[in-house]
Length: 190
Image 1: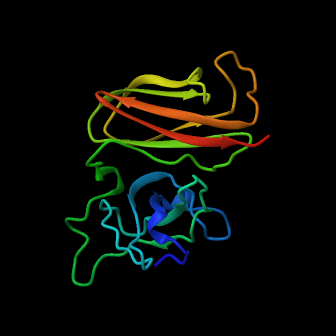
Image 2: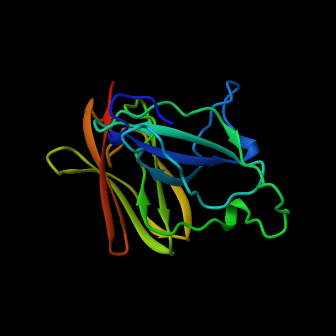
């Protein structure tokens, strides 16, 4: 359940963390692997069917409103085996394969001095991730190479292709993978 006046305008993103990087001492997560996204119904209720992960994997979530404001990571919850199910037949975290291409909201957002961009690939693809200003001018190419199936992330240090720091403002980031393309916006606050 999510408690907000307009829950149907919120996007909840789920992430998995291995025990080794399970978050800070507060018990909150860190978004190591993107698992999926849902939008709650108008009552704030939701259920999420996520890719299989190994028992003990830590799951966390963020909530992003219609204006692109993203919450902190929620407290970790350890994945457990359902009652009566043995460990045999449970997929490991590395076996979880995305069913579709996806580009997540960057985190943190707003950010300073750097942010992380997560994306998922259901098939091996050449991936191009670029940053643009609001005039559509390319600021930076973060990656342009082949990636395997799975969950990936890249960092942006708020610098352009020449290594110069860019100013505060709204920027767009684009993922191109095969015929898939998606754009999201983010805010840099200096």
